[in-house]
Image (cartoon, rainbow, N blue to C red):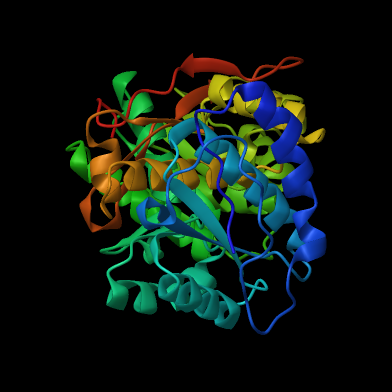
Length: 390
């Protein structure tokens, strides 16, 4: 069973009806281990004959501990369908149960029922489980994960990746004259991903190799900053791969141990977005970090609240973007997500987005500066993917 929402319907009808339909789906969700279609949303307007309908499978955790998150992502996906696809495109949700095995079963079932594109699943492990059956069937996957290791032929990572973040912030700093970059981060999967991305970014710009200092996860951030300083003394820009309290303590330790001479520009990651406590740390005043386009996100959140009477979780924006690409792909009558954004980049909930071959995704990210007592200031707006900085 499936849902069909034609674009020709008036927007106020969407607000009145889709909220009622989708918010009630959680109660109809099947229980694992056998994922299945859930419910049938009544059409709001005319619909194409079944033989002319192109289908995308939505792989979402609609039962289990992550069911509320899955419901929000389902809501956002249908917003994208309403925005991007006319009559003749439908989304068919399948429950993954929040597990790799459930995601693989959901993918196989959706494909067997005629899905030409898969939207989701949520996590890196689920994406890995879905990749093989999808690839065998020639069905592209638009996954919500931000793990760049999952990007491959036929599998696109739609979440904001460490590589996208690093390339954006490095390009912005280099345009302001930074030549020597450094990274201080925890020696974990995220820290190593930042290191790999930084090496690639500076190499592509023809700059000297970066200085990478990774410290144990249990290390005190203040002591880590002091220990990293001898190696990072000569850098022009320092990327701090910490967030929250650890980022504040690292920066405070770095400033307290400051030596004479020019100081590097401090930079962070998109994890800093929405953390008001960072701006209260004097040592981080003026620090830069990349993040999704704030104006696009604000518009998405306002529309979501209007339709569903609640604020969306952050990952709902990723679901919107992936679903919008799927709707465009099916609207064009094919299975090629690259073609869907080749001419016009998608104006997504998290800013502009373009897909490339080999599973590569380009995102237009803004650059922000922390400002004491205020919201982060936009230093550079989000460029359209494919422009300078990518």
